[in-house]
Length: 86
Image (cartoon, rainbow, N blue to C red; front, side):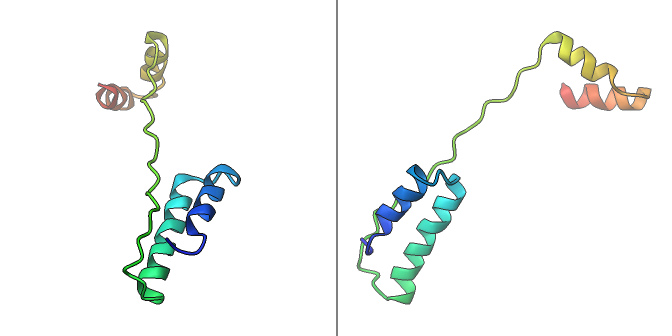
């Protein structure tokens, strides 16, 4: 493990509340630094890649769907909305 790389990543997650992409970028930077620049490839870096939480799709009510469908100004716009939503 690199000199303090894991505590730094944990600090980024817990204290600074950075996004997963930022923590992954820092983790990759540590891997590059120790593996390529310092040529310490035999050193194991136990820094897992952060997983981005999956978001569930928002479910619209029947009234909301009807308002979306009716919001098209022309027949073509309403048809595109209905086709896209289906």
